[in-house]
Length: 433
Image (cartoon, rainbow, N blue to C red; front, side, top):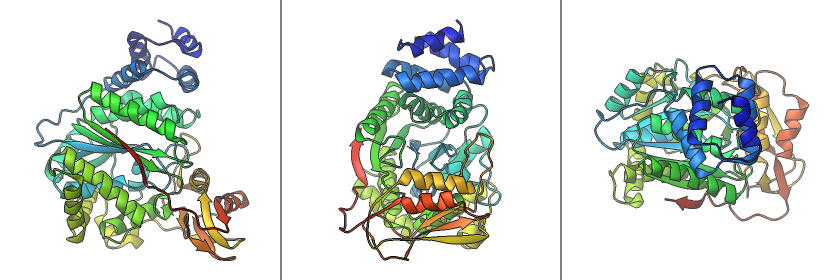
């Protein structure tokens, strides 16, 4: 086989065979296919799509490009969660210790920021000392002893995904459903999980802007799980405004701590409890999501969830004192308020633009090799439905350098102000089993 022929085949809307897909992944992982050819194939897939069989074959080839973890020595049903990415989406950070405190074994292999969205690993690395690069042995031991670990995919777990993931971010191919689905499921199946809760974002801050595409992605993910005997439940959740009030790595860690104290924003807390309850049901710790939610609320109230977060940080060499002293997190040198030019109600938000503004401030990557500044970001003061007066702060920029006027304008223009109060957004759009 020749890579140039396979690129042409997908360019011309033809179906790649399982053998061809396995060849591509094996040879690219081995370094025998250059990035420029893989980039061309990724764009052909983005433009011309893949069918279910191709997507499943791609996920399996990426899964088999490295080590598949065996967690059978850990008793119980291992349940993981994955989000397709959004702005202000820090749910994994409070969720992992919360469900661990309730007895769920939660092996979580997470990713970094993609495009305008933040990454769980980048956020956790805002915690001084936190190590996301544990060995497989450390990962297994930590899940066995304390219920959860959040790490990056090691060089031995789905190495093909590690290479392709970074390439997608800088070639404008992030949004392709087959690439998203195969990336997610290759890592999750390789991590040894027995069941999976999927948070598929939909809206102007998601990769899937429309309900139809979000549902297509959710169904693709659930189908790959079914073919691999891993029960999956997919929630379509709203991303027409950021989750919570913070965008940026250290800022989102602080907000996650607030959730575990029972003091977090309503939407972040609600989604954490909804997804966590589903995880308890899949783990057979609770019979219903209502019963599971009561358990989780109790773990927040009695401090167990917060203690589990401290344990998670300590296990991964981080400074757990930040939980009680969040001022120890990286701090921006200065702040700048973005103020309203009109009075009225917030009728809409350009969530994608707010995410990109945070990236431009240094909170994400425009290029593969860019460094992330953990201290910078945006704190929102207004969200959809809130009233606002001229001169009132819509958001505050957290800065380590002067904010370009372009970024200031981008944040200002992300808020749509009208004369009538809009209907509240629906957090959960649909559930797909």
